[in-house]
Length: 410
Image (cartoon, rainbow, N blue to C red; front, side, top):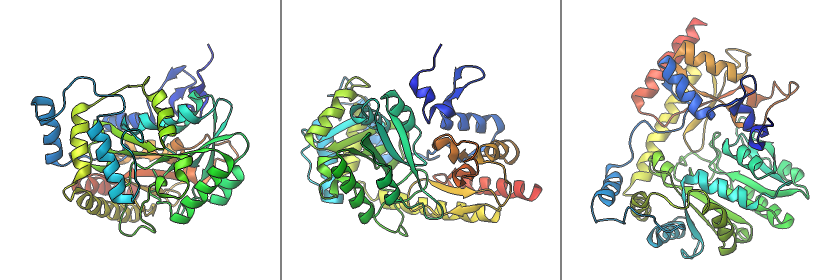
């Protein structure tokens, strides 16, 4: 039996066991399972190990259990009108972007559904889709499902800035989309005004759609080179771009799966055409709570950023002391670290050793890239590990202690 197209995609190399012919869970699920198997501290999967703000969770609970919130029946496919109004108000307050909530804002079951619906809406069969590498793993699988081909422009250490000249050179008459993730997962890079403006200019010149994945927008640290701006704040972007946000990352409630997509009425409508045949709708109570949080975060965004910055700095310090070459993230949940000062083995093998022998789970960045040929095996992306710092201080201290003990035993 022939493989489905997504199994032959960039992501397919990481989720399909050719020996047994079985589909594997994503790298995130596999890492968590490995951590559980070995009793390892899980710094692989990017979820906080503490709950989001109590007042936000209480709003959702009241919406489910009382008449204080919306019905628990099907919400509208686009999302409740007041949810879309809250997203529009948020975009105006933070970025000066004016959106009509009636036809320029759409609710999604998490950012991943918005990403999926966008790629399926705009990536034409037989076309090429460009992304910066490493990338969120669903990009490769969904591009393949759309019948398109993923091509990438690598982000290079130490600063992982996007090479816009390389992006320009990669665009061809076959290009249908450019996938941008800023603040970037997993490097933490925040794209600058100049980088954004050139990307939008290229998209308009070549008639391609930009999908901007902005789920880490409220996790930008005070030492970043630039503040986050949504793509829709760039002149001319409304003609070619859609932007995606998430309450899960902004409020540390990743299991709620509350996302949204914004853009011109025409582009949002095209994504809606796909989205309505995916989940159609979800989470009325979570929409209610997220809308209230977007209107007033009660200081949570700043408090959360400060906690994450402390976690980033402590993890970097601990990784450096353990012999890794760690890179400072400008935003997000993750520190990337090169293990070549400790071993020349590729990161995929080092990750297995860390979980088994050190008791710390991390994700090899090669799981978030196109498959490497033998000739490309020494590419630096093949030697990077992703460690999550969105954890309690005691969790990070435990992981650091284990990594340093492992390093001393080598």
